[in-house]
Structures are given as C-alpha cells and as structure tokens.
Image 1 (tube, helix red, strand yellow):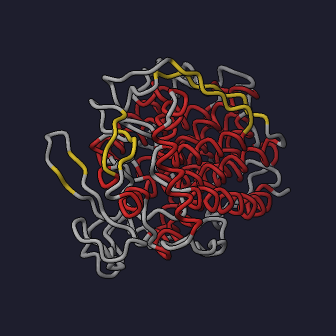
Image 2 (cartoon, one colour; image 1 turned 45 degrees about the vertical axis):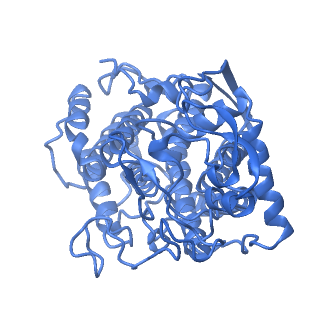
Image 3 (cartoon, rainbow, N blue to C red; image 1 turned 180 degrees about the horizontal axis):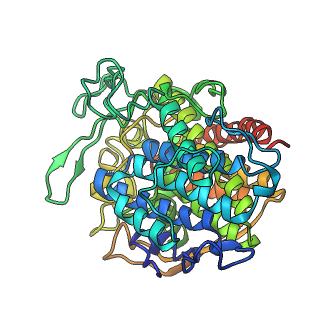
Length: 486
C-alpha cells in the first residue's frame, strides 16, 4: 500500500524525499532500517494526521506539538519494556520483560498499539486511517488487552498511561480547566490584549491584526492558546526555567535599528529569500514547526538507515524538545506580550515613503509606511499571538541542537527545491530555488532569520528564541539520557 502524500508534502515530504515504505507484515524483514522500520512508518502517519489537523482546525502549532510529543512518548514507554536499560516516562507498575522477549516482533507490536491508541486519542478524526494501517500490519486495532505480559497489552497500557498522566496538564484538551465550561482548548486565564484590532494603546504590546478569509471577509483572530505557558513540560522543570530577558522597547536605538532591518530586508527580498520564507512558513495543510522538525528527523533516519530502536529514541527526544520549546516560547510571549513588526513598522514609518511588498497581485511598490505588511498571504498575514520570542526560532534552535546532540555531529545535508513566491504571490513567481541545509545549526538559524525576512519578527525575537531553544534541548537531553539508561 503506497500512500500518496498530501499537498503539504509538496513543501516538506516530497521536497526532502520523505516517503512511506510499503508496509510489511511484522516478520517479513530481519532488520528493517530507514523508512522500512515500523517506528518510521508510524511517524509518517503522524505527519499526515498533523496536516489534516491543520486543514480541519486551522494552524494550532502549540496543540499539535503536544500531540506529537505525547505520541512519541507513548511509543518510547512501550518500547522501554523491551530494552535492557530504558525506563518509561509515564508507564508505571509494568515490569521490564525478560531478556529473551526483547525481540523485534514484540517491539513492533508494542509500539504499534501504543502509537495507534495515542494517535486515535489526539487525532480522532483520522482513526480509520490508523486502523487501516494496523490491519495492513496484521494487527487487530480492536484488541484492547491490558495484559502486561504481552506486547499488545504493554502498548495499550503505555498509551493509556500517557493519556491519563497528561489529562489536566494545563493544555485544556477536554475543557477540564476551571472556567472553561467544557470547551476544549478554551483560554481559562482570561487573557485580553492591551490593544484592540482598531485602537493602539501601547505600541510596545501585541495588537491583533485583520486577516481575509477565503470568502473575502475581514476578521481579526484572537490570541492562539494564550494559556500555553501553563502547560506542564515533559523534560523541563517549568516553562519559565530559561525565560530570556526583555526585548528592546520603543525609544531604544536597538529597536529602531531592528525595525529598520525588517523594512530593508523586505524591500530587497531575493528569490532565495522568498523561497526560504515560504519553506519555513509552510502552506496549506502545514505540519507546523514540530512536524517540520520531525520531518527533518525522518530525513536523518533515511540518511543513516536507522533501526527501530534508534528511531524510537530519536523521535522521543526530538518531539519532547519541540513540545517543551513551545511551552517555553509561549511563557516568554505571554509574559512580555511584545509587539510584532506589523505594528512596529507602522509606528516608526507612518508618513514616510518606503519600498515594500504591496500584496500577492501587486509585488514590490512604493507606499506610505503605515501600509506596510509582512510577506504573507491575506488569509494568514501574521501569527495571532505576541512576538517575543519567535516560536520558529525557539523550536528550530531546540530541535536543531537536539539532532546535533543525538547524532553526535552537526552534519545535516538535506535540500529543498521550490518555486519562489508560489505560496505568497502566484502572479509574481520567481526562479526555482534549491535550499541547502549543510548543518543542523545552519538549518535552525535559517528558520529563525526567515521569520525576520518575512516580517513576522525582529532580530531580538529570533536571537533570544534560538538561545532559548538550545537551552531546552540541553535540559531535555539530560532527561532523555536518564530515561534511555545512559
């Protein structure tokens, strides 16, 4: 059964050569590696489900980062009972199995049931897709055994342990937090922006901005999950553990210089710049930043021909870092409630003529600075939440550092080819560009600077975000090493 990648794959999965191998019965290969191992294939399905989630619920990168983080924690916990040294994160009171049972088949069965149950919990609309894959593997998705002496039972118990442990973790997945009235992912903290979409009270603070939906209707989305700083991390002690110092404020030379840089970068966007902005931003059916870096991890799996054991461990660490980095970034975002360039450029350049991007059918023109906008489609002009720190920079800095630490080398080698402007200004297409990511560190930094080029962030957001993400990666690495028994 070959799976045809979704539209997002044009940007990510096909660009990086990601594919799902032909599913095999669990005993056909003695040593499945790379895209042939079952952990990789469940990861591929997780990316498809994340893309569907974006399509159905609009981008919600905080939420999907938690889904992916917990799914791969569940598979790790199930696998740990068939490893000589690893200890689970949430699975309690299930003993390590005897050494004679530590074989590939038992591991494949255990992690498949853990992945299936966890993915059905977090991506319930895709349950038929997951069940079909279980059937392809020769496994019964209806088998709900909790017999801890069997791989089926261990897989089911691992998923249950994660789900139960993370209920009430602050994410408000079930509308369980006080003040939610049962509404899932409802903001129970009562966050309200200082500035409304029409009235600027404090230009240092975040202001909602108007988007245009597919029917041409204007609307100003509220802040996305402003309570995410309250979510319990996996490996961090708390979301504010590495909170950076404050961003530069209006009146400082530092902020003026950084706002000037945003205007200058947009006025001089090359086709390579545009391609980088679009690749890192993603398009329809995006897998968000956590999925983006999971896709990079799968590139590493194919490059290095990983075994199931290697992928289980790498995915767990990679996605724990992505989930925790989102929590840490949101802690900073909500604590500082800092303005985005969309408003800051207006503050500094209103009444001045500048060269800037006029929109998808217009291209670069001269305009009054009060009309400046990010290089982004009308239906998603600017991320709807405060700026500092950049989420892309935090997650990319963290996941890049995690892959460097895990592989023991900074060498990456992925490439992505796309047409500049295809997602933003289809009537002003540029050249076909091949982006090269020679190292993990460089890929993280390219992700961060792309957000400055796109007009979503100033350099302070980017630099602090990269550092924050790297701090998360190192803290989580200690947690990871403890649980793999190293």
